[in-house]
Length: 328
Image 1 (cartoon, helix red, strand yellow):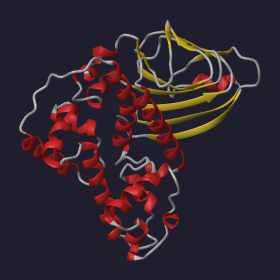
Image 2: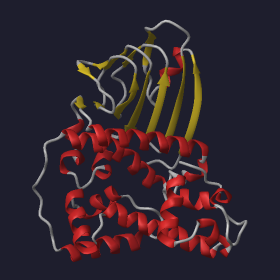
Image 3: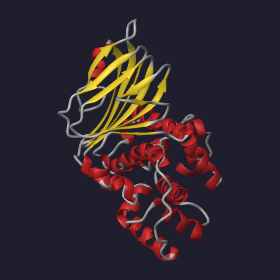
Image 4: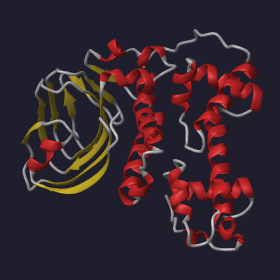
């Protein structure tokens, strides 16, 4: 992964702006619907990995030439009319796989919104590590359509939009120390819908839960204070999400996602206690630990520590508005 970070957003005034619909990849577009095209296009770039989210108000024809050696995984976020890619009729939150060097053919019959993740094919082994059916690069060499689960798909869409919104307005939250966490968080939103479309996998051996938990905690200790995503742990230890979840439930009575959130909250608490008022903000510390829904973060914090984050920072009583974090 390269060492450059990008957060960029612009308003669209004409279909030509959608030539860059996917960051780093040229897309041929033609307007189908009548009227002046309006919309927005935002990009997050982390090295060779990117997330693009676009929205437009009229029908469009899109084609991608076969000169790009990157894998593109897309999700339909909104549509007022039919959307078709190749022979696939897309429903809300469905995931589309466009393999490297394959021509793409899409038609949006009305106003729509999409998200597109672009990455090196070799990166799937680390991003989806622990999930054997997703971590094999060969599994992504064929075009594919994955039907989203209604509940999980809606959650994934909200998360992607929230990540883009918060990083767009809080660019300092995308730093080199947290870039890997954001990359994995974005990838998981796509993976959730792919996994829900696959048959259940009940294989896999559950090692001694406490031995596995010790390996996880050793790994977390070695990473220092940066936030760590569940998929990173699965890749590093070679275990599936299902196996990890069962181990955490057996030992702690809660899942690995909740455990890691508690750990990140503790890190925020310690940083705030050690910081002088005026030297930092609650929002910046929270973003550094991967909390992008800052209103929800404040609720988690209050529930866990019995005080607002502003009270921890400097040991004073304050209102949550004083933290500089409104609703998510």
